[in-house]
Image (tube, rainbow, N blue to C red; front, top):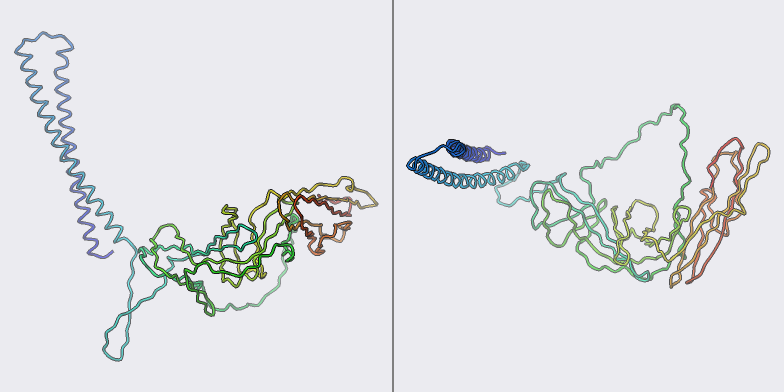
Length: 440
């Protein structure tokens, strides 16, 4: 804060103290008058309580005294209360001025030192550019789907903020993917020395499903070209960064919540299909697949998903993934019934020597209650051995695509309205009888 600003602040503080002291003095006088009023009533109260006989002239004199003095006290109190109200108003006015000055002068400020070299005297204007850590942005998306026969509408926005202490009014915004405060220096490898480490027991993990990109014929393909609905920005790309130059000026207030700035909207061709993992959830989820999504220059960020104008959840767009296909889940469809049940007639156990064998079978049933054909992919899994004493025998998997490395099973169905399908898979596991395994 500059010295002249400090002087202004001190003058206002002195004024506040002046009015406060005057208000306190006036309040004290009010209390004195109130005490005198109470004393008068207390003085004459015993005469009335004890029924002491008084002469008429004595009663008249007492009444005249009380009327006159109480009138004077009341008028004085009213005058003092008016003065207090005026002083309080002045106190509030000065206090507001002080708050504004402190807020204005208390904001962080800096100085710019410029050194100019010129071969000859010249006149001109200087344009100063600077970086600040107190401003930034992150991309967010609204992705809307409705009719599976139509493309997806994607809207990209910038969630912008700034805490510089100065409000930005009618500023031209450029959103860049550059990171000026992250080191651009290439790292170096140090020598890797191997040393023995203490043994730790391996952590137990529950079986997990591995994602696998479905084949293209498991989707309803939408034959549509990319259509730009509107361009609010101009996109420029350099060797290392992408910049989004907003076409109209914006206002961003310092210290406020993040503000959404529209960047661009586009209509993207997609293909739709249903996925289900009945082992984990017996619902069928509508999945949209976007091919070559890197062509749209998307950035990592949260995506809000809407289906038929209803919010269905969030996803995350991660351009770092290697796959050329982006999959988005638009929630489950109650029109597809899926059940997974244990087949007891194929389930059993046996003992032979020092080993025991357990056989497990599951049946999955499907029904399409929708009015149109659907493409449905069902995922399940076989167990995978992690020890030579654990032997797994795959007995049946009803024509599924089997990944022997991961145990992933995948069935593809195209169901007509009201059509049902049933299939099963079975496996047996042989292992030492003195060991325990978690088997379904």
